[in-house]
Length: 315
Image (cartoon, rainbow, N blue to C red):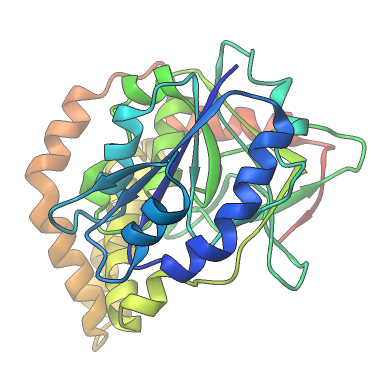
């Protein structure tokens, strides 16, 4: 088993200096052959110079323009040579034993993705298993669950893109992250929904640990309103691509109710809707081209059934 690490970077020099040593330590301790690829999205700091001067073994992709998160990651995914790809943000610090609980699962032929527990620097659990909860506004992608202590692995709705292992062959079948989600948000959830609807598995391994500060990168470079606009636009994009039956009907009703009544005066929502509407021609083509064996409703129902008796807390 071999691992390619793909790290998207934009002006993350300080984070690379802090976190690359932890990654290299964990990779060496795993004893697995590996390569590290850093996809640099036209940084203006000394990121590229630092890598070349201190980590000559690392492969650096130097984008000539700023592509955004999805496209930047995809540029790294495409040149990765190994069976499994660890997609990891620059602000993630992985534990030296991160790979040990995961390795035994990598021979699972049906496994698409696997991720571990993500803690804040205050040791508070930040990201765990993702629970398939629905609300009036659609699928809630921010509902996590803790599992019983004796469980070593459990199915999850998706794995956080901050630190996740993808099967390279399956990832390429899905053509990587959907770049309609550029510049950021929901691309990690959406690709796992595609995988689950193909009949593949996503696993959460609580004994595999890494650390991640709250919003160390995106909020640093963008205004609060812009982040809100993009997040809500991409939530609409994901709903359009995957919701079915009752959930699809509720999705459309709520979207237009917000436009007409609920969010009157909140300009950022109208900007989100305008961005979503602009993408509709491409979204229609996506829906026509994607072939699945399961509906999202079936995936969520089966996941809930599998998690019954295993979940001790939602948060």
